[in-house]
Amino acid sequence: MLKRISTLVLAGLTAAALTSCGSQGSGSASGSGDGSITMGFSQVGAESGWRTANTKSVQEAAKESGITLKFSDAQQKQENQIKAIRSYIQQKVDVIAFSPVVESGWDTVLKEARDAKIPVILTDRAVDSKDTTLYKTFLGSDFVEEGRKAGKWLVESFNNSTDPVNIVELQGTTGSAPANDRKAGFAEVIGADPKFKVIASQSGDFTRAKGKEVMEAFLKSNPDIDVLYAHNDDMGLGAIEAIEGAGKVPGKDIKIITVDAVKDGMQALADGKINYIVECSPLLGPQLMDLAKKVVKGETVPARVVTEETTFTQEQAKTALPNRKY
Ligand code: AHR
Image (cartoon, helix red, strand yellow):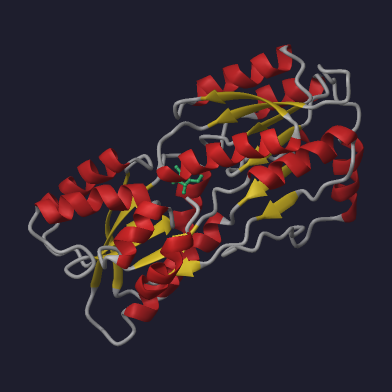
């Protein structure tokens, strides 16, 4: 398996915080009452290849673990996720898991879940709530680190040049953790050298169609684009269509860095149309089900579970593609 998934307790996490995680896990308001577990899961949507793979992973893992899954697709809307969570509270599920479409605005509904003694697990994306007792654990990637990895590749690739490097950025969904963090990590690394200039940065909402549309606009207003940094493969793939439509060669005239490493992205990398991909694993289902079983039993779980990920060059993509699971 290409990825090693490991559990890391965040540096600086106090023993007290860990203890509180365990003690609050007990006493879930079980709706089943027969020892079986029902999970209410609110998914962001179906905006990307990554999301489709993530949904499959969660659904398959629930089946394999004997957990009954109530699944809802929020179609990228926070209000739909809040409605779904309220409905899971009403149905007295044993545990709620969700991938928050944006970081802010969750405290009220999470307090309602806590009052109902239903443990909540954040998966894939974080919330910016200061009250960490509102959820038991957060399972997912380190998005800031993903942005740093993208920035490091760029810095190394343009190591021998002193000319300005004009970068355009396709951001993920506005206000989402991966958009905020991937932008910040990338900016932190390239910010050390003033030759790197982000000349345009706009949201493509993590979709292929929007990635294409925004890239077309970037190309019209900026004749000298050297690099595209797209926060996911799908937006990068949409942008490739725009670049080709403008008579330029993706991967050569414009270097492209993306995040995710889904099959379509990896194929474009192997074909030379993308130059570098930072991996973000969607295969969170099995770990999510393990954590759910523990929190329902009232066992202590780490406050943060980080997914370990790798990066791919064009040569590495050619080797990895035949065994790629998603
Ligand atoms: O939250 C993970 C991100 O959401 C993925 O990188 C992107 O493809 C998805 O839409």
